[in-house]
Image (cartoon, rainbow, N blue to C red; front, side, top):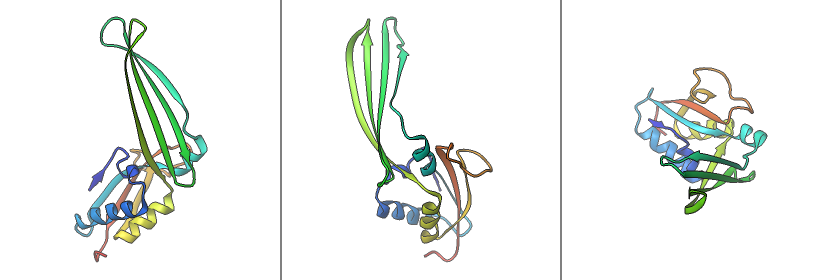
Length: 154
């Protein structure tokens, strides 16, 4: 089972995360692998999400796109609500504004191990994102987790 690109981070309630892990386990035979990525709590708290703005040239002459990202860190809830505003400019004049918000959970290693164990997995590796080895540090915002389904199914 593969769950990449912060999918599990959108499960902000413990019950939803537990259900997702159990569902992944039910789709695997013993020995099968569950691979997912997650935001690394120590890095999120150490680096803290920052407001960022970036301007991109448009596909047509005189057009540009400005993307503004404003995060709100919820340390107690292990979440970051990211507010995104995208502005389309034509010759310096505002043509369109699009706004959206995303609530994403970050995780701590022992928390992930707990939920994996509860769902019938054993941890194989917990590495910096897309690395084959190594232990995530407070500088590694994203991680890759590999877990193996164990018998019997809980």
